[in-house]
Image (cartoon, rainbow, N blue to C red; front, side, top):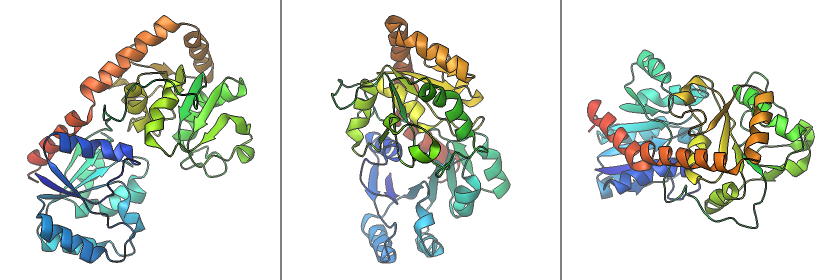
Length: 329
């Protein structure tokens, strides 16, 4: 199958890239067609379609928010009678602001949120549940680097918080339960990501390490720590990408706020640790910082689970099966 992907052939968006790699590893051909933010996108798109003759169109995420006139893209796609598939990685948090705006243009939506299937059904759009995934060649255990050396690490962008924390956002509640107790307790913590304004948030700036721009360094950041903290987006809908990433990198034990949807995929004290409160977070952090054997056992089991059941080849095959079931291919 030849897939024309509306995206860039770079590994920076590695949570996108893992699924793309999965298709390629299954033997499918992926053609990258970067039409985002390009005024000449019509000629680029038509040229790619006529040159490569793809079987389907694939897009991921909020690509069309950068377009002044998205319908022109769909006019071209429909002109060539090409089926189109969308992987909605913003669900459910940005379903109204992103996914629902363009869902009807697609023959099939793949969503990371199982509960969003009902929302797509209401829109009259076919959909399937396809959670996040990892690529073992990218998300893997590596040796420690002198550049990264903290007991605890948190990979999280400050999406939706702005210069203050939005208290109506579950991500805020997650942060308060998992990360803030560690900051207040002055543990050896480093937070990596964009959008943090320590002074405005009232947190010491030494806890924040900024953005890790080189993807190959992300496993190194995990390798330099004993514990990783997760900041989840949603309580009942989706499991954030960093959960899969941390487990796959297999260097630090993951402590995450308890959510029912996570529990469907990963088991407490077998694959990771669930915390229900700031006090539990502190108790687990204190225990696992000082119990190497117990920590390493859970890390190894979590890595095995995500490699076995959530790798990119499995996820890509699930996507292909969903396309067949929906009659897209």
